[in-house]
Length: 423
Image (cartoon, rainbow, N blue to C red; front, side, top):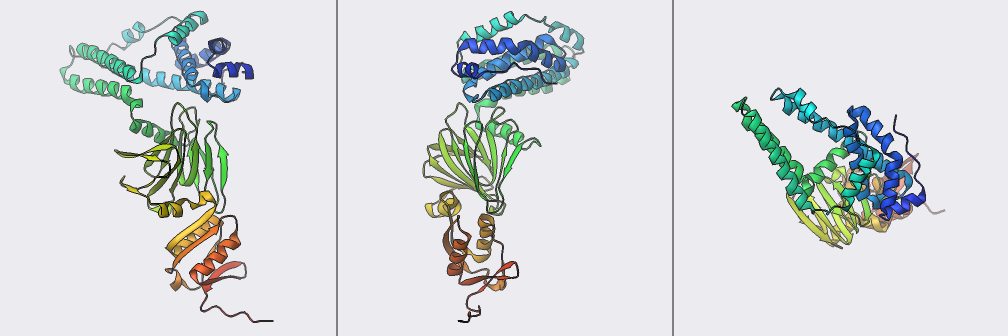
């Protein structure tokens, strides 16, 4: 059962968001013991649970600007604690495996046993951390890497007395893991990898629009999303607490507010990184894995494989499935993203493709009586707000006549259509 949480008042939330330390202390003292007890049930170690909870409050404090409501702040704290417990569990499993290589597991566990502390003692450590000089990210990575290398060297020296055959493999494993952990958040490739893993989980959240349906939604981090017709958006399970990451299958337009961490949007095999910027993306299943991306305000970064490109407002790119970037000219961008302005636009597209697009954007299911005309090139523009406008534009551009046979909408060549008799 989740630990009980003392209700957060709007006043406490406002002070917390404003960076007032007494608000953090109040939130911590009201919930520390209950959260520690919950974490200790999973870790079977009160001292370790205390450390996890303390670090969780510091983590949430660093992201306090993202807490827009009391319920969101509570969810952030719980998510941080759960993540900390999971991380500690994995760390222990790794330590157990390493300890087993020298047959000293019991002594290793006893050596690291720590007595629990009082709430006052834990808060004193949190306060000290709050007022300590903050090293920059590069310095943190360098320090973490040095620490990992030191631990690896110590472990290798001990194991070498027992088995020379294990030295190379263990040393390589520990050093790689240590350096990798230190650099994890320093490159976009790692961020995208983590986001991709979260988005493929079964608990990812999904929003869908039907053919002919479009909508707009404001996410918890104040990101505004306009979703196009017949499109799907996946979000991480605890967006934005776990990660500000989404995936678009179809098309969507975003207004990403300025934030400490960028909004990550996956479209086909490309990733968009945005903060204080607007952009629109497209990649439908029939786009052959191609991603089309356009910046409409501010500057965004687009990454695919090892290639990365920045797009200023008005610039657009097409990213092929193999990761190759190609400029997307204004005409092609209009064809891909005309829906944002409320228009359906096509230029010299075969009629069969236009019919598929009309079904996507209007929900119009038009059958062709004469399939020989499906290769006919069509150029048309119509309002997305009117099915009749789309039908009239199609008839004029493709030289066809749309009618009904029973309840089925059909299309015939205008040249062979029977002439209506005058009354």
